[in-house]
Every structure is written in structure tokens, then in C-alpha cells.
Amino acid sequence: EGDEEILPRKDYESLDYDRCINEPYLEVLESLDRKKARKYEAVTWIMVFAIGVCTGLVGLFIDFFVRLFSQLKFNLVQSSVDDCSEKGCLALSLLELLGVNLIFVFFASLLILIQPVAVGSGIPEIKCYLNGVKVPGVVRLQTLVCKALGVVFSVAGGLFVGKEGPMIHSGAVVGA
Image (cartoon, rainbow, N blue to C red):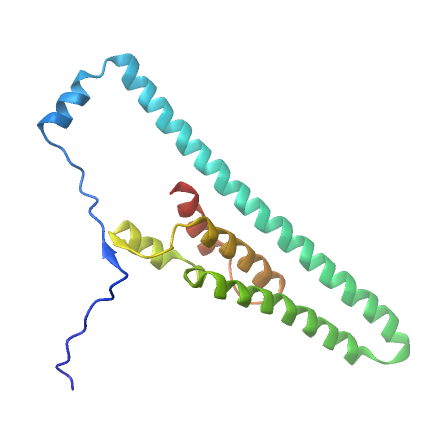
């Protein structure tokens, strides 16, 4: 039983990222005049800037909605605590907080059914992708939306998760 061969999954495939540097490619590079070379470099930097801005906007979206949902949750519970402190029903306020957190976490878990690759931080998947392993669906727009909304609902629901790892995955999706 210990000698069983582990077969690779059929939906993962290795990518070839070796730069093809050959004589015709070098001739094309050498044939570019200074103006075209500068234009190519400017377009490259503009794309890098645009990717950075879009990734920053995804982070801004996440921070804004985490803050909004957390504020709504705490305002709801605060009003319940204010009402119940005189009546002696503070346990209901705690149950209300638990219920709101469970609803947020439930929404976050539903997003995983839509796009399973959006689970976790996404850093291992991106490292695999950059090392040449094609992970299905890792850089799709649907993955970005599920990842961002999942982080919003998870953090607003009180789970001990960070936004840093998912931001790396989100930046990779924006860059792809």
C-alpha cells in the first residue's frame, strides 16, 4: 500500500515562462529605434501604475465596506444594549451580536460555493501560478469578486482573518 503511485490531477497543467530569446527576437529588439523603445517603456510603466491603482481601489472597497458593516453591527448592538440595560435583558444583546456575526460569516461561506479557489489567503495559489502551475480559475474576475466580498463579510463577522494575503491575490488577479 505504501508503494502506490501518486498521479497528478488532470486539471492542473504546467506553464512555460522561459523567455524565448533567439536570433529573430534579438533582431526585432535591435531594430527598435529610440522613440519606439521609449514608447514601449512608457506603456509598460503606465500599465504598472494602472494595476497598482486598481489594486488600491480594491483595498479601498474592502476597507470601506468592512468599516461600514462593522459600524452598522455595533450601532445595532449598542441600541440593544441601551434598551436592555434598564430592563435586564443584556443576554439578548449578546445573542443579537452573535446572530449578526453568524449572518456575515454565512454570507462569506456562501461565496466559497461560487468560486472555491477564493478560499484562504491566495498566496500559495499565486506562488504556484508564478512557478508555472496553472491552477484553474485562480486569476478570474469572479475569483476577485468572491475574494473581496468574502474578506469583507469575514472581517465584519468578527473572524480572525487578515486582509493582507487576499490583497496579494487580488493584486495578482488585477494584474492578470
